[in-house]
Image 1 (cartoon, rainbow, N blue to C red):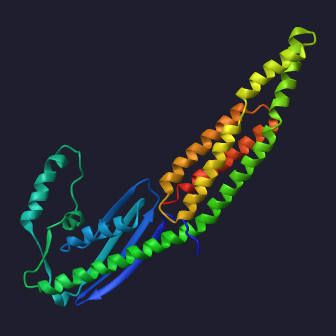
Image 2 (cartoon, helix red, strand yellow):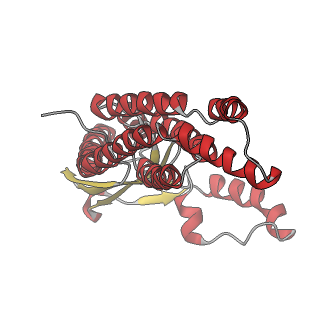
Image 3 (cartoon, rainbow, N blue to C red):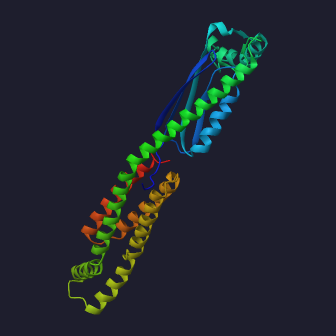
Length: 294
């Protein structure tokens, strides 16, 4: 099977049970210029955030990721306690901002979610806790792998769309090349007609040829067409690579548009202008789809 690009939108979920613990992990991602990872997990398992971030960074290069792990423990396994000393330090640190109106008064839910405020009872078996944390870390890996698979599926849907738009850009470039052949003749006829209107008499053929030739040189679009064809080849190679090519495609789209704008500005015939405008519209559609590519 040929390689395809990866998208940036997806969802992955995994669940697990160990001892008295049960948990569920959900990993979501949406489009983003860079990779941003947000994690929220249960108190007392401080290494899980590092595990989640490292797993995401090893698999993804772009996208806004939200990873949440919700865990429950059976009551028979023991309770938890509030570390009052840590809680008071948080309250003292926030007090000046609340007093000046820079921050809202903290809620109990928010305070209890802060690191170190909730602690496990000293009587809990540390070995069991460590094993549960390792099992949760494994579930994190499964959820993130499922997210990667979902993003790949989005990429499989995007690939034919991007390929079709690139085919359209290639076809329009060929059409523009065929029409551009008529530019010198059109420029010569237009110049001769204009000179006759201004001077009220026939203009020498030699004068018309000289001036029209100079204008045709300025209106020559062969370089723009060559560069457009080169960009098409580069884009197709990126799409076939199966790598994270979103940033490079985004840059290449800017180059496409630059050449299309120049083509339109140099056009001396209506048919070529029409093709140039179609080319710009197709490039814009390609740009919009590229925003979904990792």
